[in-house]
Image (cartoon, rainbow, N blue to C red; front, side, top):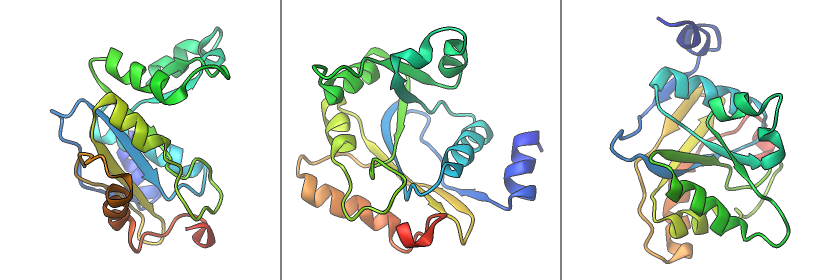
Amino acid sequence: MGFTKFIFKKLLGWRIQGDFNRNEKKAVLICAPHTSYFDFILSIMARRILKVEINFVGKKDLFKPPFGWYFRWMGGAPLNRGKAENKVQAIANVIKSKEEFRLAIAPEGTRKKVHKWKTGYYYIAQEAVVPIIPISFDYPKKILSIGKAFYLTGNITADEKELRKFYDGVVGKIPEWT
């Protein structure tokens, strides 16, 4: 057992349910409920255990020296976050330009309690013509679940209703924000 797997499973007591289809090299991964920075740490460990590339986008300043190499190594891609920039289109262009890019994003857009998801994740997937893969962090059960690829129909209301079924009963690190 590798060091990361030992920490994830034995020390922290977490397990991974599901896996990625390695033939689906591009997707938008919606990770929810996102209630803690610890979600990021769990994600980093899971990607190492599963040996799969999972990516993120960040403001271009993060990718300058001295730490730019680290953020690229971690799967990051720089994004121009100027006000005139269409962020959905810019992120979709990043996905399209790569041979393999699985964008991890929190549909809530924050770690706080929300009553409605933001829609950017949906329009990014639609513009990039990639599926959405739901990922959940169930803290009481200590299960990180990976769902099957979901291909959009173009009806955001129906699609989001279907995607949210994956999260039924899932409780985040801060339960009252779930």
